[in-house]
Amino acid sequence: MPTIRIQNIGPLADTGEVRVAPVTLVIGPQSSGKSTLMKLLCSCVWVEKHVMLDDSQFLNDYTHYNRFRRMLGEFHRLDSTFFSPESRLRYEGEAVIIELLGQRSNARITRKAGFTAARHNEKVCYLPAERNLISALQNAERAYRTNDVDELFNYIVEWNDARTSFPPERPLPMVFDANLHYYYESSRRRDMLLLVDQGKRVPTFNASSGVQSAIPVTGMADYVERCVGQVGSYTPHDLLQREQSLLARGPRRSAAAQPVADVRAEARHDVEELFRYRAFRLFVEEPEQNLFPRSQYELVRDLVRRVRRTNLDQEGPGSSLVLTTHSPYVLTVLNVLLLAAQAAKRDARATERVVPSEFQLPAADFAAYGITDDRRLETLTDPETGLVKGEWLDAVSDIVDEQTYRLNSILYGDEEGPADEAGA
Image (spheres, rainbow, N blue to C red):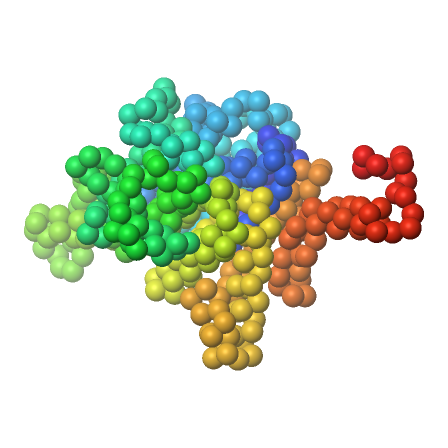
């Protein structure tokens, strides 16, 4: 799995080396740098993917003319104000290393040893927090306009691809409410909900904000999971490049030249294997948006299950999920899944009755980070228990408990609260 270190970019002072696990969580106050970290990480993953698929031309393009930095500004809105002469970025993936120094220099992209063997395709998907704005618009792909292809426009395009895989005859059950099934009505280009108990069908435009927020998370997670194992799109140019490479290498098995038809068949096989999705990388900002705590619980469990299921079923590079959150319930759910993996080592059968194995999250597959007041990253997992540290589960609880105690003392105690602390 990759690592990334960010220094003096946007709100972030120094993240230290961040290990990206199959399930990675980042929490912190508003405007502390959670989205900046995830956008930079997603951008590096996306660039690495394309270098692996077209290691010559793409690498050259993104190490010249400030194209890497321009992509950050245009796509993720990380413009020049996010960078300074002291800015540093270092990403190390399975196949490449990406480095960015200072405010104006080009990115440096280096192929790692074993690059050829590590090459693979993966489905990369970023779900921004602004997805709710789009869910609340009918025909959002027509209503939203931008001069550049930014993350929100890209989300609209990707969601348009994903939702066509949920026709009325194959609706998607909502994990947080078994009574709700989502489907796409292609003839009228409408997202719809089936209320199973009533047999009633309503446009998602009329659904609650929580349902509008959760549908694309559940739908995209289902879509990218099903992409794994399928062949992604490639161009005639990709095929021609492979044919030329095989012809230049000469005959494989005999002194006679291979028939052209054989070369083309071999090239097509090689290209299809390279472009076959081996993993997915799903980035979700604030999955808890507008959701009741029980719904947050179901949604997070479902996301973890999809990562776990894909990694158990597929050989090679693992899939991953990166979440940012403000919700203590998201942390609590992950702690339960971590604890279940530990309990299963002692008694798998008994643990299965409480938390089924498909949801159990081994400590080695999880990483959690909190952004501190000085804009650095702190590892949140306790080295002894492997769980998220208690003080990060609900930082406001201590304040509420202390104020509740003092107010009860005023109401039911013998002494008045200090006058100078009345507005504390």
